[in-house]
Image (tube, rainbow, N blue to C red; front, top):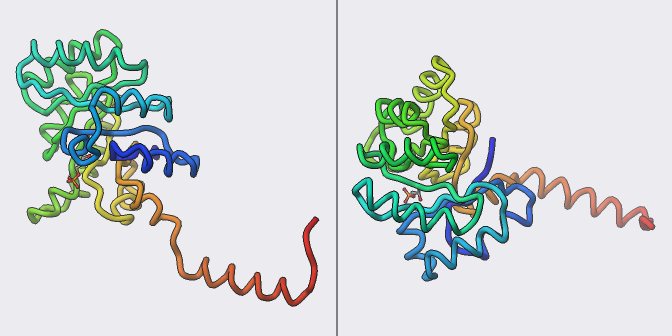
Length: 217
Ligand code: G3P
């Protein structure tokens, strides 16, 4: 499973990159607002940190506008994935861009039907929002399982990019289902390291080692 940092905060992206676990980055207009940075400059800086896919989202709602904005965004670096919303104009844009060799991440997916048509439009990534589904009383992971089944039935190459991840178990459950990518805030990936028995084990080993009076090297 690939790990994408779901943030536009450079320090958070660097923190995950330092672990060696970073495979890409996703941004959206809300994350850009939260970071406080200039959109284009931020994406350009992210491209100096990772050679993995970097999602940059269009703002226009019509096909021509999306194509114009995509043209600006894809020039930033070779690894930009244009992010489009799951609308008729978004999927039309998806088809045009992917036919031209540009990566596209179709975002704001909340149903298996939407995931099916995104794959038919040639999406590189489909982004189902599991946390926001959980928020309104649906099990987000059921959607991931449904999409996995549909994509496997037809050998769609669209990667399932689990988004709106809120806690480590979302990542574990997505991995059990066989999702291709999880995008999450760095803090959640760092939580994957945690186990109290690991901390207790290290403390016990160190105590016993000190008692031996030995040193390595
Ligand atoms: O990748 C989409 C993500 O940023 C949305 O997350 O927590 O705002 O639902 P959230």
